[in-house]
Image 1: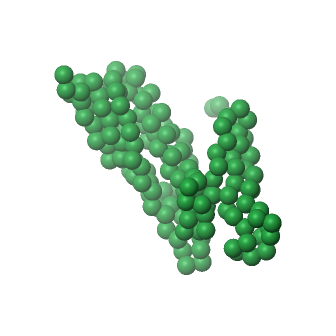
Image 2: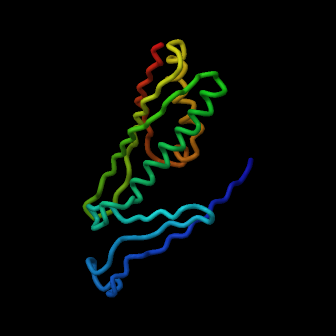
Image 3: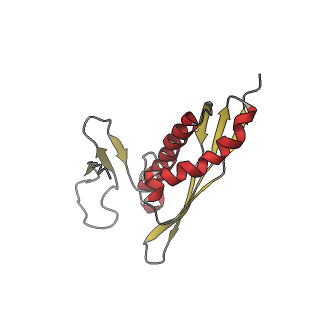
Length: 157
């Protein structure tokens, strides 16, 4: 078994001069840094007083699941000779918030629209979503279900 390590730095950038004096005295903005990569500016969801123009942790979780699935899916398509021409995912996540303010995701639904080269590839292209899910590092780390609703079309010559 291989062990992979990842490191990131989160820096809060939302001190408006009043620190955390009260719940509304500070911004929820932050910067994510990983050595050698572009910074990501983030905030909390607007429902939790965040900046609607910045990515929030919920956005990033959804994008992590979707992109991990995409990469495994493309891998399995390549080894199975499925020629993917286009792939676009319209992922959705459901999070419930408890009365005390805590919350959790209950599901993510991946809704990829995929274009393959030939009609004969469609059936196998659909099957490979399950295999990609079984291998996705992020999906395997979650305690809720990741569903798939792929739409696969083929190129008309």
